[in-house]
Length: 324
Ligand code: SAM
Image 1: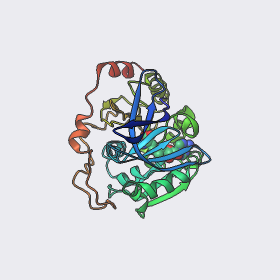
Image 2: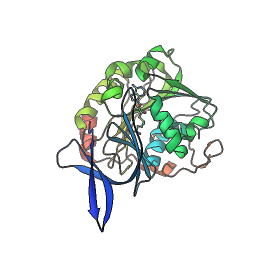
Image 3: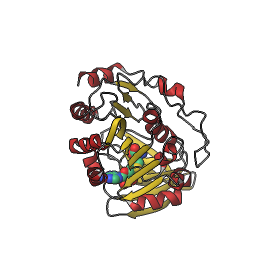
Image 4: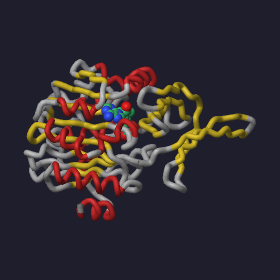
């Protein structure tokens, strides 16, 4: 994965000293830098380094182990698409599980769906939750929804204990496949996900970028094709500060409906699959339905048109993924 290393350098210009956080991509020759106005929080939990800084152009930024997790400016493109592409593709989702997602953004988006009765979230790191509530209240507002039940723990162990066929949708909003999230990208985890889904349910998870991690994507596709059945469609979105992310949504094994991958990156790609699911035309549109959204915040990125339009793919990615 593209673990980034933060090295801050002090830039002296026009007699003003400003701290610039340079995020060096693990891939030689790539770098993404954000100007740091002020470091707001720095801490180390049992699982990772946690940092929040005020950037000059993307608002506040959450960084875990040197990898950008969200910025105030572009988080909408990630949280809205990872949530609504799957949830708008099935009628009346009722029980939803979020693995990871400690910032609360996916919870905020799930809460827009009035059919949902139960939202479980299993996040391993309480520090991420506490920091998000303090510094990203518009994102962490998702925790205020009375349907949300928070479980602090490892998503792998949580899913092993979930009774068969419990959830209509599982959204795995995890960090990169290193550290605590590593097992969330492996076959046994996907097998426990399959068991926890009801027939016709969907899963959506994060797993890197077509530009940087095709090898990871190919492994995930091969694993998921063994566990989850179904043909595959694909979709796009864009998140300027995410140099990686693939999100995967696939059906319960007893239901050859839905295999979908969602990639969120500057050149993101979403895969959705299902002979009986017409992904290009959401069956459960929510563009207008903001009534139940706790934050009363209008959708900033997702709409039914972008849902449908998101399925046009670059040939190189289509060729590789469809060959698996
Ligand atoms: N949107 C971000 C992205 O795409 O990189 C992810 C946001 S969220 C902050 C990622 C969360 O996954 C973190 O809070 C991290 O603590 C959590 N996480 C990592 N491994 C986990 C595990 N095994 N079980 C539960 N949560 C986990």
